Every structure is written in structure tokens, then in C-alpha cells.
Image (cartoon, rainbow over all chains, first blue to last red; front, side):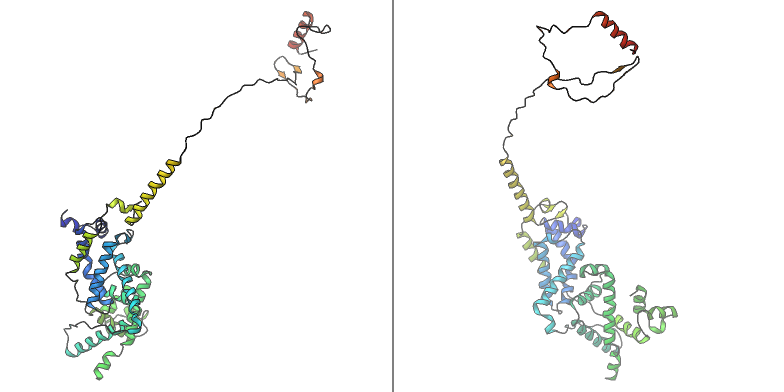
Length: 192
Length: 186
């Protein structure tokens, strides 16, 4: 079987081949999802690079060792995000995240605006990330799915196990909450 | 939250909104300042840097090695009735089915032979309702319920020694009877 033939297959077929021990299918599905998933873990697990890599490894080990846990009635993409989401939830429970809220480690901010705007945006980004650290697990997942992975609300709703309308309104109220918190952000900076 | 409002938030300042758009916006937020605050966050999130992390290059080779150690099963073995099932479940089910089949087969005994004998028996039939009125064209039977004759009403006749008082029908009586049957009159 050539590599081209594998790359033309859909995710669900690739999963069936992984069950049969097809290494090329594993490589293909890894290439399709590894970047998205490591970024998801990175965002969800306090921007800890090592932890994100470990979780990516564990996720694919689960795919290899328990491929039968994939329900063929579901889409593979939804399923893999659901598994990743549950892994993060378990991790939160393990480290008792709520009691030791750590601020997100700030990623480098690249802006191409004036010096004043640059400072403002940079601080605003950091402040947003700190605020996100205090969000509920599902809300943080919602943000990463929507913002980082650009998933549709339908897909997000399936992964989080809620109606699509709920995911949409939750996304709206998260931003509204942020807006309330940072309404005077620019004014404060100018005063400084 | 409507898609139109979402689009407005990402693209227009409050001052750039038309009257209709402002009316739409005010169905979602309470005031101009709310709209501007929401817009600031929306724009900030859009400009929020994506995570710049790539998968470790060592992960895929490790996974391949792990997969090589993993026993591979033919696809039919992990698929039953159109649903994927764990290999151990499918294998256990097959083995169980074989054991149960063998047990049932070994316990089944030979069916005993059944002999059937058909006995024909002729019984005595009594005619209790003799014909009454006879017509030319048809015979009408009138139903007269009668009690079953008792044993005393019958006499045992010895064919070899018929009783002297019994007598047969004479030719004349027979002719009269024939006339009676044909005419239906007395």
C-alpha cells in the first residue's frame, strides 16, 4: 500500500487500519492531529510544554492500545477531542488545580502597532490569560477549541456534551465577563 | 447570540454602526459602552497569539515501536454485527459459543422409538327415528324425540329357530305397502 493511498483515507478508516496494526495509518493520523492536540494540551495544562508533550504521547498510546474504545458512530475528530478533554479534567482533579491557581505562562506577544498600543495590548493579553486561569475547565476548553483550534460550535458542543446553543451563549457570556473586568483597562494604563 | 452581532463585534466600532445595526447590537448589550467593551475583548482575543508548540519529534518513533509490540488482529475479529468490539470480548464470545455448542451436542440423547397400533372397532348402530310421512317428490322426516329403547324392548331372536308367532310380509301386503309409498296416501 502506498503512502498516498493512506493519506486519501478518512479518519475513521484509518482507525480501523490502526486496529489491524497498520503503522502507516498511525503515522497519517498522527500527522493530522498531533499539532492540534499538543496545542490543546499546552493551553489547557498551564502552558507547560513537557506536560503537553507527555499528554500527546499518552493520548496516542491510548489510540494504539485501545482503538476499540473509538465509537464508529462518532466522528473521529470529535472523539479525540473528547478523550483529550477528559484527560485534562483528570489532570485538574489530580493536581487540585483550583487550590493552586497559577497564572498562564505568557506567550510572546507580537504586535505591529504604536508603542502605546503595544503596551496596552500586551498587558491586556496577559490579563486575559490570567483571567482564563480562573475559568471553569469546560470554559477554558471552550476557549481553546474555539480560539486555538477554530472548531465549530457544533463540534464543541459534541465534545463538551452540551447543546450547540449552550456552547454559543457560553462563549458570548465568557467574553462579556472579560469585557466587564477589563472595561477600564486602557484608561488605567493611560493614567499610569 | 446571533451571527450578525458576532460579525459586527469583530468588524465595526459603535460609531460606524447604522441605526439598524445599533438596534440589533442593543438586543445583546445594554449600552454603547458595553458594546465597545465587548468589541475590545473580541479584537484582543482575535489577536491573541496561538500556542507556538509543535509535537516532539521523538514521540512518533516511540509510538511506532509500541504499535509493533501490540498484537494485531484481523479486522473481522474486532468487528461483530457492524460494531467494533474489544478483541478479548470477541475471542471470549467465540470460545464460549463453541463450548456451549459442544456441551449441548454431547448431552443430546437418541429419541426413543414409538410404536403405533391402529385398532378399528365396529360398534352397533341403532336407528331410532324411522321415516314417517313419504311424499312423491321428497321424503320429509319428522323429528320425534324418543327415549332410547331399553333392553327390554328387544327380543333375542334365534335365527336357526325362529319363533312360531313371527311371520313375514305376504305378497299382498308388500304390494299395498308399495302403493302406499308411491302415492303417499292411506
